Image (cartoon, rainbow, N blue to C red; front, side, top):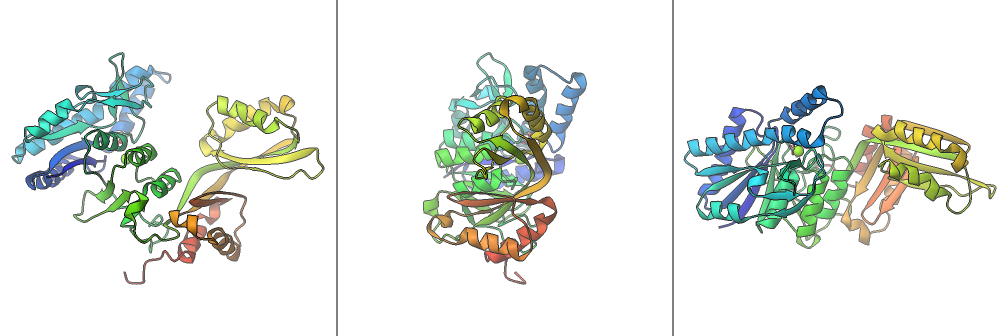
Length: 409
Ligand code: ASP
Ligand code: MG
């Protein structure tokens, strides 16, 4: 008998037929004798609608009331799934965040989990019942409802799996696993049987939106074996696991891309100690996340250029902040471009193999694609290129690293 947490996302519980489908899948597992805790999202589109209502009510609304409103979507699906399970003879009951309790801090709209009470769930499972938990929500010390940030049900599921010492956390979604790259761009992308936490973290934060990034970090921290699989097909998905579980490691596991990037170059910044620190301080103060940074060598010994990337949504705000500090920072000009994409090659095998970056640069050069910014870590190489070359670059790299599925496969 195994204890398993199963999470079903918004499309998987998108209407009554789909909720019944989920109930059947859960029943199957429960009938095999496993202890099942189900975590559900709101029906697809519902959270967006609830967010819309809040904005309509007041553009600048009370974040605590926002949480009271948007947490309601998960309450509905948790209750409905429990009813559907009962209908097919599976004893089940729903739990809201406060009923566990799922204790969080009080950062409304983006709360972090602090502690999870498991007594109620343990009792439910011991009584032979399936527990259906509303994802995405918790309760703060002041007794008010909180939410974990968009896509937060993944985090609920992984955190519960860790707290309950579950054997596995299954994340059911509308894709059947994690691919070597986006199959919409590369039809010959392959589904991975296994991927390491670290790689998944890079893939998730680089724009492969299968799992919420925070949930992957949590799975890595607590060693939760996490499986991504389809709620519509009955076949194994991709297991996200520790490196020790992967016997034969490919050098490169995947190609990720992220369109939401923008590039800023500060031209003619005075070249003396403290300048870079002064440059980034006001951006950090305004919570603008700077990602890749390149400082060029000073040609004349007096001034230098600094190029960096920020989320595209923050581009204009970042430029405005820098312009406002122009006098003090003493630079000549700002040049920026939101029409760029970050393409990354990811793989833990890179640690022990040379030449991975070179293959990337050669491949892009062959296609006549200009690299604007480069950054590397132990397990990835990322470049910024013009957005119009996204597809070409991703396809060429996928082929260059031998990731294409065999023809006819
Ligand atoms: N319903 C929430 C959202 O859309 C949480 C989730 O689905 O994970 O963000
Ligand atoms: Mg999701």
